[in-house]
Length: 83
Length: 162
Length: 383
Image (tube, rainbow over all chains, first blue to last red; front, side, top):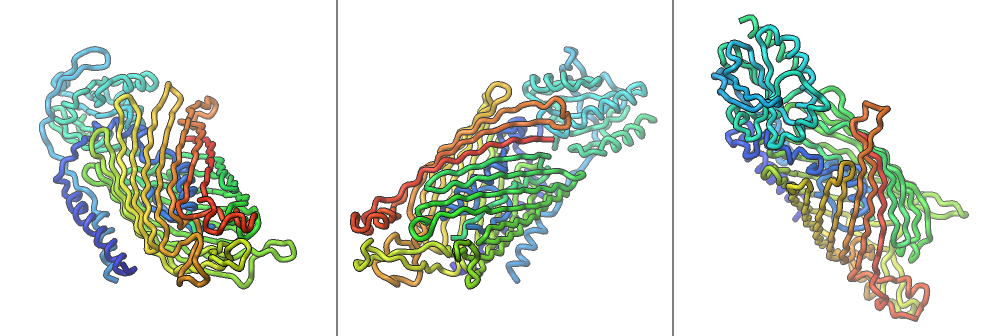
């Protein structure tokens, strides 16, 4: 796939996601099926998606420098190129 | 160009805030066990201004707000005002452990089956509801940010003089 | 080969990140390379709406790797990376932006990144859009009169763009799910100034001759990942993650990861992790090309080879209290050890024929394998 058409595909995916979720969230007709007072497990430290960013970022870097694959690791933020 | 405007539209859609409404309804009646073993009903406090605060020990802003609520309770409790701290956890163990470290002087009630949380349609943690002397809900607030305690006090002052 | 390094600080919409400082010592040892150094990270809220973060990171590299020994000589160098970022919370939306600067003697990279994160459905769903842009300047070190300096005739550029969308979803009281898609585009000099390819050459005693690699000037990549995190009732968490990667160079890779974390007694938290990675080779990769100028693009970098790897990790964290400093809410000391074993499927240890020409036919050397040990020791403070 060429660059512009790939970008267009990404934009379409993003638009669909936000078009579906955006207006719906603004009107909030969908009742949350996990109430705020039922979040005790999810609020637990051990359920954090990234408990120690300093460590997970380092390990992501170790793998990325040695592998061909990169991205979609859950870390927000860019990459810098380095040898 | 089309891609950029598509991305911009996506970003603006995301930025739309969620809308939540507040209604003047009669405060739903409830009866719960309190931390000192008594049975407490909302009906006992008819004629008082009642502030109901839904909290949990796992909720950071709840823990942050409670000492300030304690100050509010001490300040207004002799003017026909009471504060009920409704703990929403299924197991009271963590709540009691935290209260031992950070005690409050207002009554703590347990709602382990979330009956009262559902009755009051709690939408966030913490949630604060203020009921006037006639049993009508007059103030609802979701979450806690430093400074919110002033909004509570403004509301209490207005309702106490009624 | 241009590799990516991250300054990944997750953006959770609706709540600013907690105030925290971490100091880490990291050490990688394997395949003739030792890389070690510090990483310091500070995250601080400012007022009710802003948070800032900063990271200082160093890699001190001592390399006598298989690639270096084949066509160059062992070297030591230091890479320093600095990151600064800011987050702004408004209602249920978090806006983030940041900048990364990475400097080493032969590679200078700058990256800017932006993201918007939004909570929806009573905070059950968080959607994040992200974009980052990187500008790299690549140089080449040469030894002149015993001194290592930049080759003045060599100065290349590379550009990177990454677009991402991710969704994290509360599925039940005990289950969290995530989905992420990232599209990346690289342009410019994407090769390595030091690596070479080899082609079969009966005139050479080793059986092969080294030659410069030729890389495409562009690369587009797609990465899709999904994960589930489950809370076990006796207070532990189990995570499963899968990532699929494909790019315009013909590489296809799968990553599968499982993680188990459990608090033990009052002070300890133990974590076990297993990661399986499998990659197919790039279309222009070959360990040994049949003859010179075989194709338009040629590379022998093992990062583009076909291989699979397993990494096992163990982590122990101890929560301790510092009574004299009451403004510190929580403090932990953590030790982590990972062991990575890589088996290459079409990349051979060419040093056999280099050091012992004629003993093994070129292309018949044993397939290369790599064992690496990764150590981490860090202290974390929450205030």
